[in-house]
Image (cartoon, rainbow, N blue to C red; front, side, top):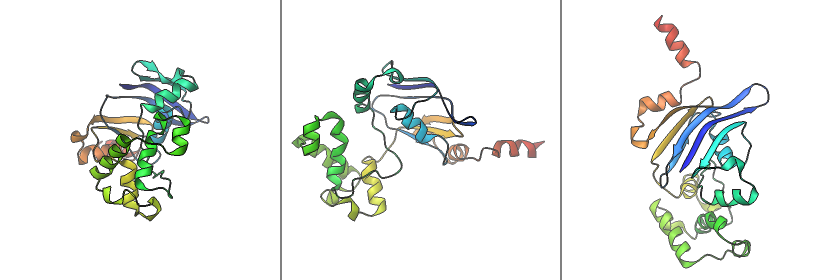
Length: 204
């Protein structure tokens, strides 16, 4: 289980990127962090992976604080966290299948990773993931020959999320099951920062 507790991050002297962020991602579920541009989504992901150092709070993976891990421990931790950024991050000259298999590099030895040595079971699992998003027929096609929409689906390699975390202006404004998200929730997540103030003023 992943727990983010009171996570804060400030850039410079006045840009508060994360404000006491709290949420929980349970084992076996896919969590999507959504929100408007600049809301803090990438900062959360980079903090969880410790690609950046936050200012305060806790990031607990099975009750172990990732923020206190050394380099060797971090490598093991990252192997247990699947993260999908909104850009493609594909290696264009490789096929769709090879790009999916690269997600296993964290579990391979350095030599096996460099030589691209994957087991039959790993290849079958990768083909199954491509099949689930309707891309099995493109498995052996280079990614620079795929359309933008197809590239995005390869990168995601899964069709559904179970859990939504909505963030706006560095603060969590919604957390719940995907089936709880409707138009009203989306409008709340993506509202402009001064929208609530404007509504309140109009009501007086």
